[in-house]
Amino acid sequence: MKRLIFVNQAKGGVGKSILTFMLAEKYPDAIVLDLDDVSSTTMRQLSYRNPTLVRFLDPATKRIDRNVFLALFESVAKSGHELFVADLGASISDQLPKFFTLNSLAATVRLLHTNNIHLQLVCVVGGANVFNATMTYLQELVESTKGEIEIVVAQNGMFPCVRSQQDQLIEYVNERKIALVSFDLVEDKTERAMRNIENVLRDGQGLGQVDPFVSVYFEESVKNLNL
Image (tube, rainbow, N blue to C red):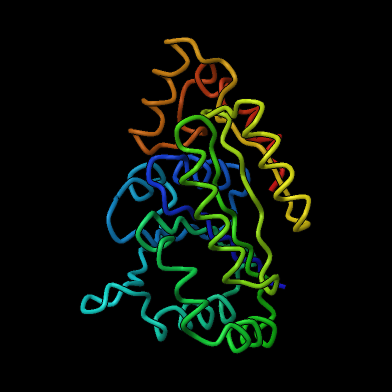
């Protein structure tokens, strides 16, 4: 079965592109897709992987173009590759629940099954001042998919939750039987480590092209990513 990962969250700046980078490093044979209509972050950070840019939004309606969306599934089905990782960006992520609500969810699910594609919606959630916005989007995504498409919540350690937020998140995913995984590009939050992160992401070279004394900051985090 082909596996298609959509990294999504309507709130910008919460780690979608970083998680996509980590997945690209973890799975070097994956095809990387950039579905972000606004930002070029993934194209820059993963330039060494030559991401495929896909424009989903209809210029007139600013909604997901159904024909383009379904054509992506057709391309995945016909491809000789098994794994695809896509950064949806904030604008496409925002429209995704609306797409499932306004179009036939059953028809989309049937198309995925017929073409032997497992679609996994990886929703990034963070704590602190981004918690409410990211949770609101998660709830909208869950309601729109009605349990018919797998959702995984990816909690970004760069935005740690306070105790009450963590309890609320765990209660929510447990009640709905949604998988919860954590990711954090580096545990070391010193100035030097953060500068190394910035440089690697900015240069778009990937960990294989940087000094081993720099890549060591990332390797364990990528290896332990449970996705």
